[in-house]
Image (tube, rainbow, N blue to C red; front, side, top):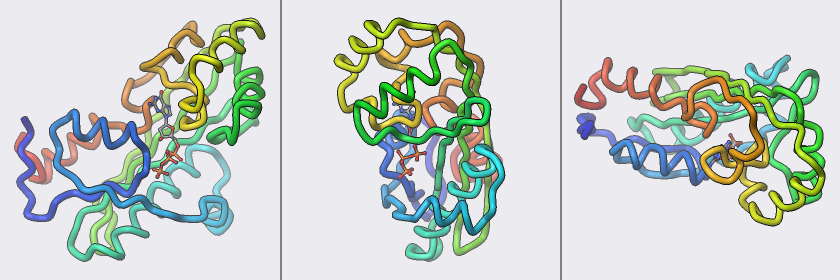
Length: 202
Ligand SMILES: Nc1nc2c(ncn2[C@H]2C[C@H](O)[C@@H](COP(=O)(O)OP(=O)(O)OP(=O)(O)O)O2)c(=O)[nH]1
């Protein structure tokens, strides 16, 4: 198990259930302090042009917001954006929005951009952005209705209204990219950095 060697335990600046589960399953010790930022305002101020740039800027903003409150501690911020052609989607607000979003994505390929930023005392220690491409089946309206009935509120917790590791897998005909990138935390890149910089035993 990768032993956390740093005296300063990691802080995860995320309310995301799956991000906490991913780090815990990898044996990392951390504390959760969700960052409450105005994502639209951060994007507007940064003048970001595309979904990938937005994910990078937002991950950094979340890490900065929490790092300012925990001097000396490494803080991990994360963000995931979804793009399909010129369309950018975010977490659906209700079941109707989830249905509309999935109707717009079915039969097409969309990209998930997952970014990380590790910040300590205002200094960016590590950042990465990874992209996955997912092709949805052209499923029927009846299937979509049954999927949303089964998924329930879980569909509202993901940027694409699905959990790939759950029944969301039934939506797809092809998935290209790293599993952890799709779930919202590019773990392999993060662990490589932690090993190379003595945060964990490698
Ligand atoms: N379990 C699961 N979650 C997914 C999947 N795809 C995306 N997600 C989740 C991960 C993130 O929690 C969420 C992406 O939204 P954000 O990056 O804005 O994070 P969120 O608002 O959840 O938390 P945060 O902003 O980090 O406090 O979607 C998936 O396939 N499985």
